[in-house]
Image 1 (cartoon, rainbow, N blue to C red):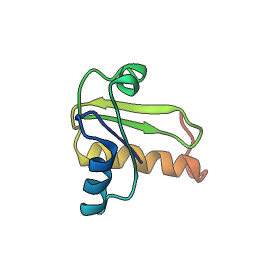
Image 2 (spheres, one colour):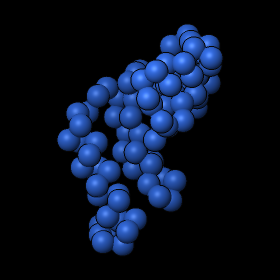
Image 3 (cartoon, one colour):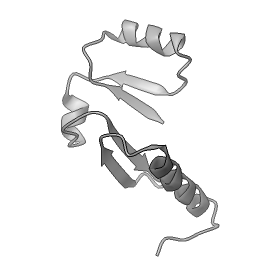
Image 4 (tube, rainbow, N blue to C red):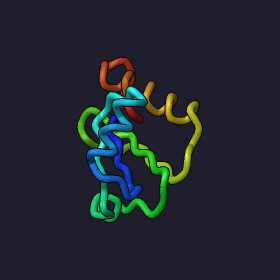
Length: 86
């Protein structure tokens, strides 16, 4: 999991929040360059990237935990060879 923070926080402040909230994934402060490159017009935006580095799902706005969990479970099964995409 990777986080991209679009709010105007300095990297030091972002690191402090990550530590305080016990968030253990990589997070980057973005001045807009990453969001433009990824064509992300709004937040939150969620991307699910498979084990080959291919974006398989993209949601603008929160899709709900069930949608994210289902997408992740399917990709985990594919990566483990338990299921192949059709």
